[in-house]
Length: 531
Image 1: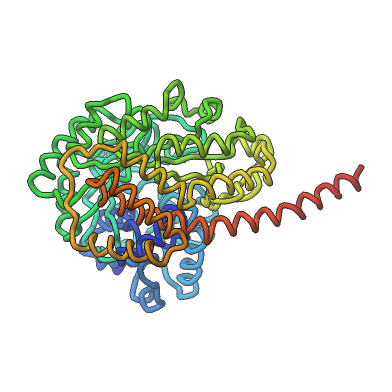
Image 2: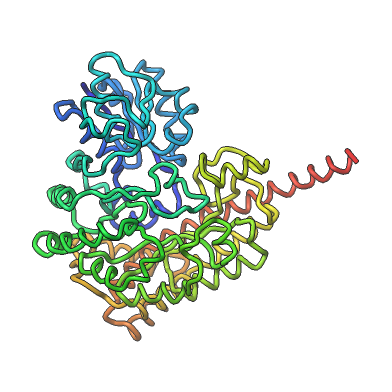
């Protein structure tokens, strides 16, 4: 069969890095790893093409050349996916949809697509492929499975796939010139129980880990593309299964020493990583340079409310500093909108992030994702407003305890402060002072040198914050001259956060605030008239 794999467009966000990607001449931060895995699960004699709508247009000719169009996507890709499915239906094309959106809201997607793959695909996609060939494809493929000749009998009725059966993603389908980084997954699932998180709903609380042999084959496949740079391990929680990760890290370190120092790594993990100095050392020895951690809030009450108990009873700022000093940079996620949030939470958030010296702080409004415990709570209490789009950077989809107008104003204050040039560069300098390199570091390649020169010109000459940029570099050269390369790279990444905040987020927040005023006035009038 001729298969077209389509990744719908992602709207711009703090995660996209769009304004900074221009320095590197790239169109997207990361490739669509789920579709590369789907391609590896399909019969390898099928004719497969990949179109990532973030890096190239999708034409009718592309669609008509396929027997079946397969899409994946998150909630934030909902609009683009709907548009592609409508085009396919108009052209009379068969469509298959899987991924987080289809898994979270299958009935909504079923109205637009011919076939759904709900949940993970290691067991269901081979069965779907066989049924497509036989002309017997069902409308839905869901876990747990019926008897399936494509998988071992002992796995029949399994609720979650055995990750050791997952094939090497088809990295060869990529044009790596479009992407700034590569993606790799070693495990799925997280042992914790955060109320707002849909990871545990989709992938469970028992982390499943690939074998060392699988990981080495995937690293070899990335290396074979000629890619050089950073690889994001997209695990839900890299240290969710510490026992297996401890065994895996020395194998990665040995591979990197022999074949792969042109690559370095970063990942996502929970805060308890800072309890384990030896595990951190193993990570840095294996080439890990940074970790994204969901800190969420400086409020102990907020952490307890959302059942993020792994972050309680800790000196979070101290542990962030430990990781920085041990050679792992910390990027972090933060959330506003918990029921326990008081008016002072906005200043507390700003102070925490500044004092912890976290340059890349993703602060968003709490959203109730479908099927999560938070969503069920909000439905039960009548506080849900509308479908969550996945966009965290504005009004949320439920009634917060603090008034919506106060939430918008407070969020505006946090974002405007954190991503002013002065505050951002100040955090970078604090971060540089704490961070101590560890492990075998990746050498800078020519593409990165060109990117650094473009960033320097844009930020030092053309940007509205150029005075703060010059002051930042001069202070770095005085205080941390050996870390100048890192300082330029941090500043280049910061260009996206600063620009996206100024050009997109703040205008959107102002618009939402203006909309709230007449809404509140109308509600007040309605209450007055009715009484």
